[in-house]
Image 1: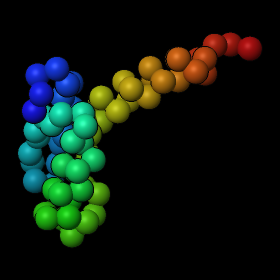
Image 2: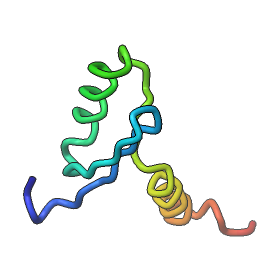
Image 3: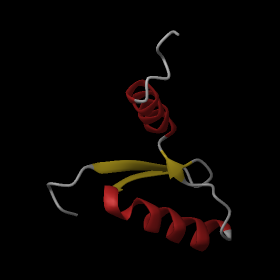
Length: 68
């Protein structure tokens, strides 16, 4: 993993595991884990807290929190 690229935490609640992967590798890592461990079912995911934080930042950037 490049030291310049941000890492993203990935959690699997069923396996009880957590790891961090480079941002550019997130989709492949999730697919590989879920295909290999869970028959393709989307169990492993990006850390939910990070997903919520990113969603808030995007909504703020789009002006969705501004009152009309």
